[in-house]
Figure 1: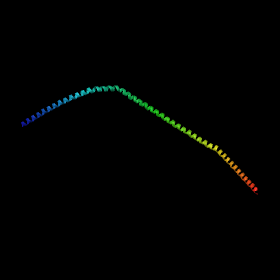
Figure 2 (figure 1 turned 120 degrees about the vertical axis):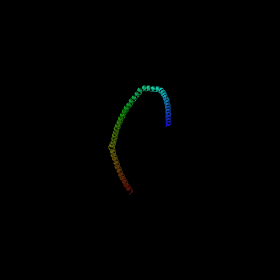
Figure 3 (figure 1 turned 180 degrees about the vertical axis):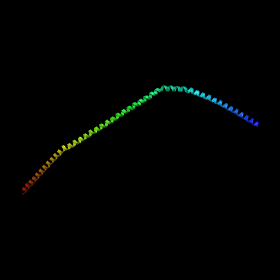
Figure 4 (figure 1 turned 135 degrees about the vertical axis):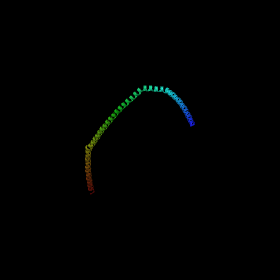
Length: 169
């Protein structure tokens, strides 16, 4: 059994030495990777640092201007809204006034047309009625004259016929 133990101890010692060598290699590689990472980070920081500083300065410089612009824009929107409301009121008043004026003009026009119609009817009644009566009177006189003329002609014709008869005999 002692040979087995010696072999087992030798194998264990070899495994421990091999593990130690692997761990040492991992440690060295990890250290090199950390150094490379630190160099890359320092280089990145050296390049980005001034940019961030400039951006910070720019933001600090423009922040009051941006705030002022936003404030001015809000004020312009407020004024535009107020003006739009005024214009809306003016247009509403104008349309109401126009509507009232149109109704008033319609009433006036309707009244004028009714008056013209009444005057026309009155004119027809008052002028055309007597004219028709006068026309009827003239027509009656004419018929009467025609009647008398035709009677005279008939009498004259009868007298002429009598005279002819007298002459004939």
